[in-house]
Image (cartoon, rainbow, N blue to C red):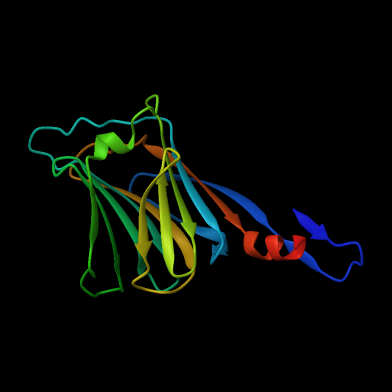
Length: 178
């Protein structure tokens, strides 16, 4: 969407891009996600039954151009937690933050899931099915240039393909509208 003010002095472009990401895959973004932008992951299915002997770990990741995990969101059903963390390439994980009671975060979901990440500059606000579950302080700064969806050792809690939607250029658009 293009916005021009009445004097035609300012022009700002915001964009909505849609990506389909299969489990075990990643996608490069058409436009980087920066401060003020939003990423939303949609799943048409939700499986909250951890298989016996299987950790049923599922992760959604926001990655920088150099491969750093700016935000790693891991759903660990057997531990009954959602883990949030960051990591530079070829380096150890940093300080993790956890939210317990995974299933409670999806109450009222109707068998579907929506995970939204708002980039506030110094932190990420993570919202699951329209409920904020954490304000994650950024441990690594940078812009998001790709997204990934992983499932290890078992069935994903999400559908085999998740839809990711990025909303970029929103901060510039808001400033132009003021």
